[in-house]
Amino acid sequence: MAWSFDETTQNVQIADNAALTLPDADWSVGGRVKLDDNTGSAFQYFFSWNNFNLNPTFQLFFREASAADPNKLKVRIEDTSLNLIEFVSSGTPGTSTAWQHLMIIRSGSTVSMYVDNVFEGSQTDAAFHDVDFAGDLFLGARFDQATDRQLGGDMAEWAKWDRALNASERAALAAGASPVTMPNSLKWHCDMVREYRELINGLTVTNSSSTIGPHPPIFRPSAQILQFPPAAGGITVNMGLLTETDLAQSLGKAKARAIGLTTEADL
Image 1: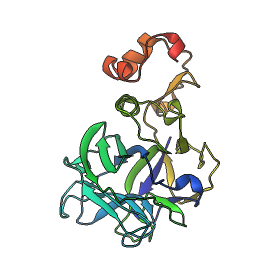
Image 2: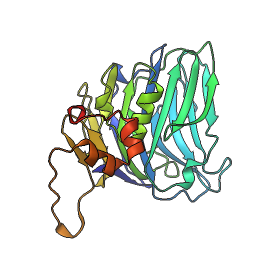
Image 3: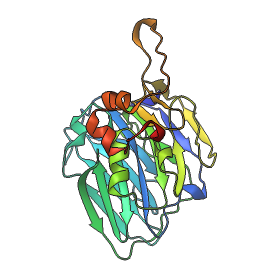
Image 4: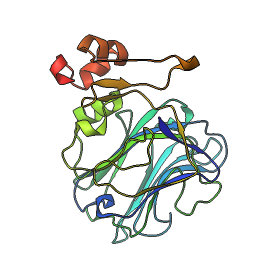
């Protein structure tokens, strides 16, 4: 299951904690988003830490189809010292209503954006420092909860690392691997399967009216299964240990290779 938002008044809040801080060093933040649609002339915010025009701040949102830069994904990050990273995607991920994996990664002094592991742009600022806001992180809405700044869609498997994920790790996540397969420097992770919880440091998660929807298929080695949305018509799906062939057929051979599956031991 995923967390679903209706583009009106629904959101989820993660309480302020040191684990949320973006350090003055490498970091990675990412997860999955699926839009219901992107019509309109405003914005669909889904990741918002502090108000848009205050500092420090971290905002991720889609510009709607009739807005400036239509269907672009925008990132805006301002550090504690007023240095600003702000740019839009080169592509138009807002046109898709499928699940997409989004990543924002800082490596050195450069912040880069990836959608389904495709590079979408970057900005470099040698003076950029940490981002540490004393307040809750809002998912599914902008921090001020403005009615025309809400997400209509779903979120799943959001996480943050205090390091820059490498190309193979980005490929694995885009192919369906869970963030828990990359535990090094993993600081927080909301799987969004059903419970409103954070799995790494037990951060407080508060639901404000969001609901539960189908979760995208995710590879979780500890559980030894692929997680699928509920079967239709009351049909029960019972899956046991999956072989490499099973996974390759489910994910597609290219995706299975991308997450490094070689033997059953890799499950």
